[in-house]
Amino acid sequence: MSEQLFDRLMELGRAYRLHVMTLLAESPRHEPAWINGQQAEALVEEVEFLRDLAAPDTALTEIVAALLPLIVEAARYGDRNALVVDGP
Image (cartoon, rainbow, N blue to C red; front, top):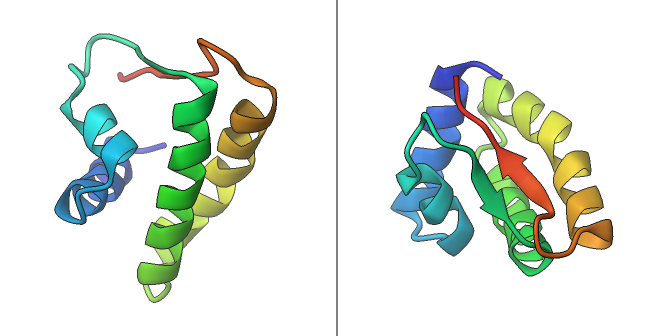
């Protein structure tokens, strides 16, 4: 995923004060950010909210469509280290 699209998604999450998205947005880029299964469940809801909000933005909706199944799987099967977001 391009950094610009990732940043746009994170900034939307931060603007709406979405908890997990804000945590990810504030994580240092050069360090992996780990989230647990419970956070992944919350992230699914946050990303779905942003998907609905950003429906006219086709670039963002395409990224969300690619990310959402991964997050759902992490929420369903993950535990303490369900998902890692790793920067450039």
